[in-house]
Length: 116
Length: 112
Image (cartoon, rainbow over all chains, first blue to last red; front, side):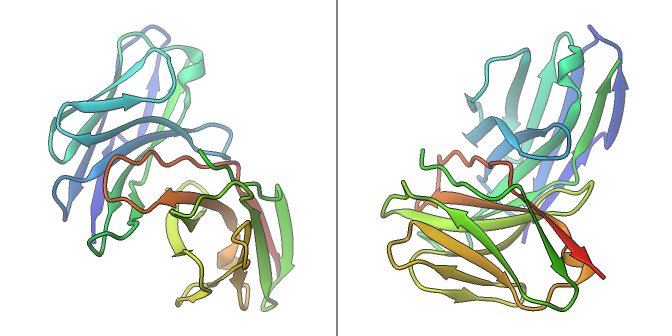
């Protein structure tokens, strides 16, 4: 199975400062990767997903961006944070156990961002 | 995308069965039904998935209606550790490129 590493686990940043959250995946190659945000403990909002290096699909227009510089690395960034960017950010990787199967998502432990 | 609807919250007593419903009336023929759960301050974890037939694994059972417009996640004997938010999502049968969206889920409370 896969292991998803996310860091930092906790981050407190001032408004207007930059952001970089990193996610790396072990145990698979060429995974589909996802960034989700969770506010107020319920519901996961899909932010970005990627099917390969350099391929990013954005779900919600905002001041966040994502990049995939390597096969198993997914980075979430912002040039200037807003108060509304606070939340729990989760990286996920899709694992397809059998060829043609639907796969299952493996999630990292999350990064809690507080913007002050 | 096909959407799922779940109750906001449910309560159960320890060691009793729990039936968590999910409606997905616009499901397409290629959509699999997946369930995940999220414990406090953790990322969600996979529970079970199915297409048409009922499914069982060590964590739970999944009962799928004959018309596939609804499904029920069954925890046979709830424990305190089963208290979590349960998400029902639909996933197309493909190996790449699929966006995966979650709703608000059902907050399950288990009473001792």
